[in-house]
Length: 381
Image 1 (cartoon, rainbow, N blue to C red):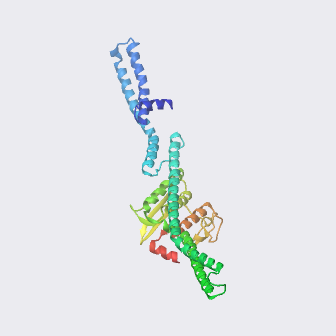
Image 2 (tube, rainbow, N blue to C red; image 1 turned 90 degrees about the vertical axis):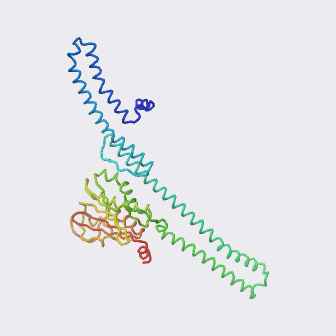
Image 3 (cartoon, one colour; image 1 turned 60 degrees about the vertical axis):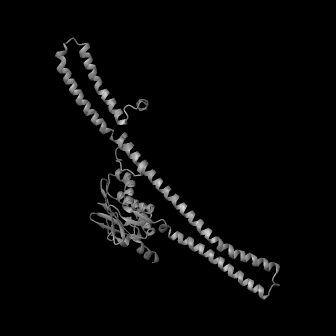
């Protein structure tokens, strides 16, 4: 670090690449300077008789310098890419897609930068969503309680007042008609209070059912999907899996950004883990009659009966066990079973439908996110 810190303090050269190339230039030219100095001072041979040798040495040195500096500049590309990726993420929030399969120092730098940014982006996204959700939750609770304060205060005041009148027998002795009227008022106020309390309970239940709808907004799901692909890049690149995205430039849908990102991320993880190393996963997005369709295709991969949750087996037929027997019954669960169950849970929360298909080319997982009117129809069912 001392040499680097010395050059950095001097600010010469200004860039890190320039510093490395400067040191390389000096190192390559030291032998030539030594040879010329020897030829001029120590060798008694006339200078003109050595000129051809010196020219050849100069040309060789220049060619070697150019080649060395070019290759050094190329070998410094991982450092520049990692630096640019970190700076770009801090400035724009864009997650990079760096190669992560190489194991030397530069490869470890790229992989570590990719993993660090991916983890940081996931943590920041979760924290921001959690902060917004807590703020919305607190504001809604405060508004609801503030609005209901009068509804609670009025009947309780009536109950307390009539109770004091009855206790002091200020109207008449117990048992008179006046007390029967007071009792009716107390009963009515109690019923009103119970009705308000029931409304609070109903509101809490409705809030639990519609939490997703409350956080939904019109978002460009193509951008959200691209972000999910970037976050899955580390695991895909480790296995040499290529993720090909086919989508329009923009596609808006009423959804929650966090929920949609989790859904697409789970779909990609299922495909990346299923395809062979060096394989390909396709991600297609399209709009069909108000429905946003997301299809993940895992090429050259197959699902066995053990992989598919019971609730999804009706969407795909002719499954085989891991040993090759074609069956339609249930089998033991696998990591893929858990991934598909998670995807199904996301779909239910987002009022979507999911189905599986399998062919000779691989298997596909299709999710249809319904439009607002269709979502309401499903919720009513």
